[in-house]
Image (cartoon, rainbow, N blue to C red):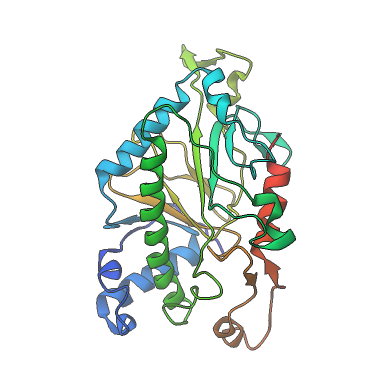
Length: 307
């Protein structure tokens, strides 16, 4: 549960990554310290920075740069990969086509998901079947993003091992049937600029001064672990504490902002229910009902996007 935190903690996870596949990792004092920090961060804020994550900073910056180049293209070019239901809700969305709690978000985006083959999960997977839509321009966009996705997915798996230990479970608690074939989501988001004159917002298009305060509605993520790669010169991400105060999470070079969301980072058809170790710690009471990740995801994409 969130508290009245005033800042987002920074956790150096390098020792965790060094021991992630060691059967005795839980006994390592450096790993134990990181697990303690993860436990506190997840309980108090649900957000934390990670440094020492091992993904080359050159790649992280290249992902940001090529994303900017795509969003700088004319709309006609970007609409060549327009999101549709037939494409499994993959592709490009114009400004205002993403909906949060019934209100259009003032950003444009590309949505990509782990590709599901036809019939892979039966009726459960049908709405999300399809291939990702990659633009022809800028060059090497697909190749760069696929490399980035692979590294981020592996990093997430290792962080989840630390979170499993923080819950009192085994390091591989979220693997196997639950998350051994994790379903990933990549969102590339571009926010339009608003000019200012005499300290006041001056609208440059139909979006108006809403840009100065709210680009995306307040929301929770519908996975478990999100890695946020922010532009270095913009403070756009905020986290709300228990009192309703918004705490800024400014970009810090060499880090990702991580947050936990509605679900695990599970297999598409994983049934989500309290871990036995958590049930025991709560006196044998199951506080939450079972949910299937794929059903949760489909309910979100079918209500969040205008297609």
